[in-house]
Image (cartoon, rainbow, N blue to C red; front, side, top):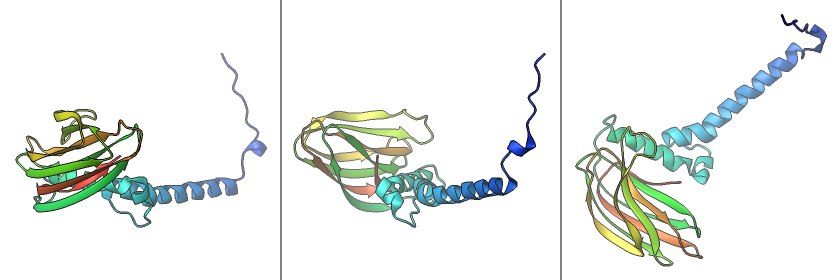
Length: 183
């Protein structure tokens, strides 16, 4: 049998210190909710920090995914233009939330040379990493029309294979819930 170690009550922190630690934790939780959770989950960014960290776009994409899953009203015709600058050797994604049958016309142009791209879709509710590629390759520009084969997010992954920053500008017209950059 093992012996139990006895704790000297005098070695425990005072109750006042435990209350302070609890209050500090509560403040941290509230700050995390304001600076991180609201922007990342709801697209609400009262401080601007979520935008700077790219969390607001993620929250807007999640809100749009709820639309794609039938939680909110149907998307309407819209037009968007978005420019993203990609550092050498880095990548980024721009995605639209769409329902099966939604259509969009698109064009994108990479200023700074050819860039690797993967135009793909991720079904709503699918496990992380599950996606379908529709087209991929290396180009400096592309345009076309697309009809979503399933509910979910559809868009582009671009990777700058060059040695200088590249700016990709994408323009979309069609029926979809939103268009956002996802880091």
